[in-house]
Amino acid sequence: MASAWIVSIVNNSKEEFVFQQADPNMHPVIEVSSGGVEIVEQHIQNPQKVQVQSGQHIRVPAGGRLKSSWFAIPWQGWGNLEISHGDKRQNIVTGPQNGKDYMIFDGAVNTDILIGNQNAWQNVEFEVTIDSEKGLVFKPVGSNDFDWLRQGLIDIAVKLFKALINAKSF
Image (cartoon, rainbow, N blue to C red; front, side, top):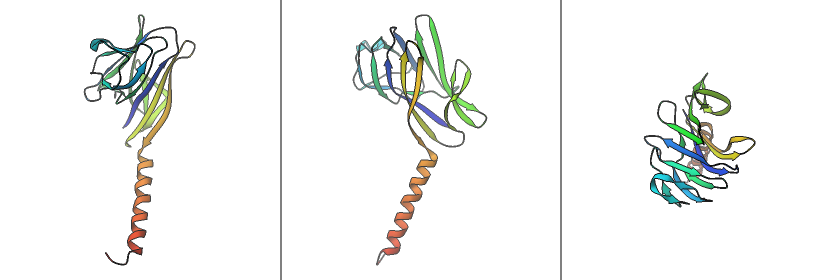
């Protein structure tokens, strides 16, 4: 199972967007923000190191930007991320299809946004840019997958083994 995370949002459009993440376990933390970003229910403008509770609204006006942690794009059937502006709404989750995990927009799997392979723990971090011409752009900026972890553990094991071989006593 792969996980997707939002690490930043930049609104370069001329419209306000609202993000509402509902996940029973993962609650976004806005680490730093500017440009009038607001956690609506908490009445906090330009929050710094503030946790957003499940179902609360994050308002990102034109020119607004934020950096976040723990901002999960929920797994299908486990939660939901709704992004809205005006009367338009888009629901986003992650989920499987044909042995791989993808982003799912309003129930339609987007095979252009691969999150990872099923049966392997992987994480992908996204910067989200809102652009007047391109719309919502999810740019992958980091990943931590099982193969990377496995190779790192093998490298550590080899170094420890060599150190033990060269040791004069145990």
